Length: 190
Ligand code: ADP
Image 1 (tube, rainbow, N blue to C red):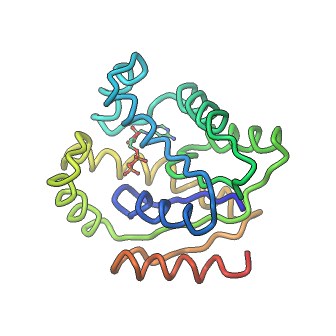
Image 2 (cartoon, helix red, strand yellow):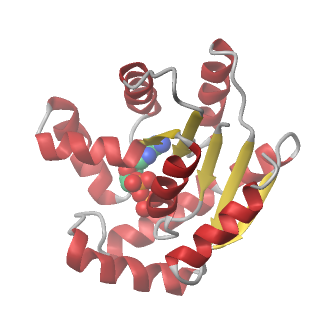
């Protein structure tokens, strides 16, 4: 089973992705997490994307597809049941790149999950999570830019996919376990 997880920053994608990957034995491919790892390691790649991430803009598609290919290559395991794309694709060009990539692997997207949370709650969540996670892109100014990029570039992908894919809208407000339960219910039958 291959899943794309959509949702605005602060929707809880990362948390839910981890739970889903464990339950369904999927490889968690979070482009944001991979980039943050590179920044922590202070690699050349990390240094080249730090400023862009801190401004809330998107890293180039070229870098994204490169890190994604590498992560898939390095984590190949026969025991995997599929992939969970978290934070990718984020614009139409990335959606086309993903489609080519999946075609070349003879794979397809089985389900698209969209975690929905209203903007005031997103702001509240992210500004309080900053205290314990310390992400340098979790400040009000960057967050406003991230939300704007999401609504301009990423949200239109929902329409793009809706003609050919099952899109499950998940209410992302509530306890982590409640949201997880909603996702599991949505995935029943897959
Ligand atoms: P969130 O969804 O909370 O914004 P992510 O961890 O998915 O968090 O992304 C953090 C940042 O990493 C983004 O604001 C962007 O700068 C960069 N990034 C992550 N994924 C992509 C992507 N697919 N394309 C371009 N930039 C990305």
